[in-house]
Image (cartoon, rainbow, N blue to C red; front, side, top):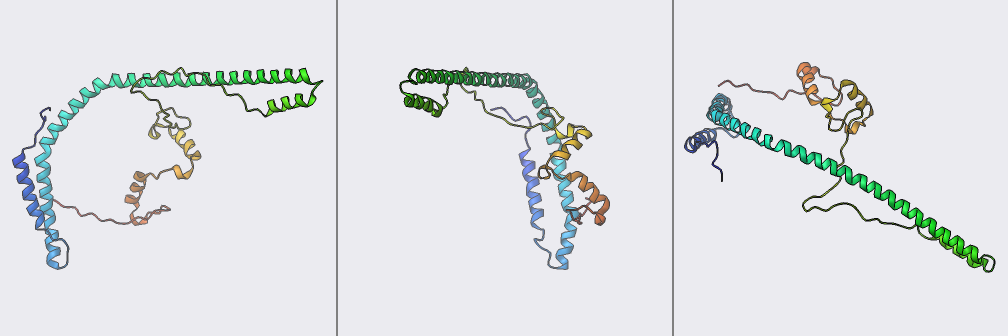
Amino acid sequence: MATPIVELPEEETRALSTGIQAQLSQLPMAISSPEDYRKAKESLPLLKRAEDRVVLFFRDIKDAAFQAHRRITAKEMESLGPIKQARQRMSTLIYGWEREQDRIRREAEQRAADEERKRREDAALAEAAAIASSSPEVAEQILMQEIAAPAPVVILPSTKVDVSGVTMRENWTFVYNGGSPGQKWKDLTDEQRKRVIALIPREYLMPDESAIGRVVKAMKSGTKIPGLQAFDAGTIAVRG
């Protein structure tokens, strides 16, 4: 097992946690008196300073870990990138080839079935014609049996190659009208978005919560957006 690149100072971390837990244990669980209210409000600056102390304690450790993680991730992506690209390219080529071969095989099977049906019809017609003058009833039965017979089914062998560990399955996705495969909504032009929005049913649309939030913050109680109700959730700012 590899040695961790960044280690936490266990003794200092434990001391920090113990001190914070002791501080938290002094907080009231509910406000039922003016004294509880005063104590709760006075605790906010103390808690803010405790937060700052924790953030400061872990800041350098996190920075070191982040830088190490970023370097490792960059090296990983440098090695994985060409492999993933090659695998994706091979998968696309193989899937395209197999689908085309399936299409060719289905068309060949249909042609073979049509030829077999034509052969059977010709044989039935020839047999009926041979006995039509002497046994017209039998000749008619031969023709009726051929008409009622199920269509022939021809199954040709598949050309697919089985490889251990490799499976093929459908992977349906979608593309926006006017866009290209893999293109995200944010990458469409304004004109493309307008055309798509005009076509997509309402049940597939999602509210723009960022835009709504900006309007609510600006308009406050004067917000008038159908289907929404603005309210003041309240925020208490605390300086350490």
